[in-house]
Length: 114
Image (cartoon, rainbow, N blue to C red; front, top):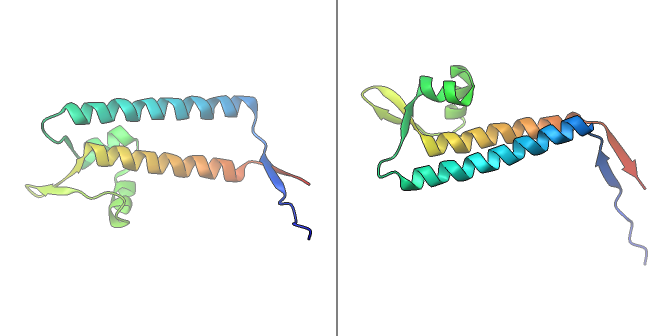
């Protein structure tokens, strides 16, 4: 009984791009660990306004609204103002960066080895 072998697919990435991806991944993972530690040490939850959240994440207000409508992040409403939990913002940042990374890998040239 012959079992067909799956074709192995390789993504071609320039050395500079690979180095950049590895550095970014390392910095994000260390940032997450540091932030989780800071959140665990705080007695009070840390909340940011929508404007501060957009500034820190480097996204537009429209992107934040779209993420809120897609229920990627849930705000608390305090005095008619949306406030976002800092830990939830971190999770959103990771999701957005993961999408960017996946899109970059999808666009990379591929080679099939048989």
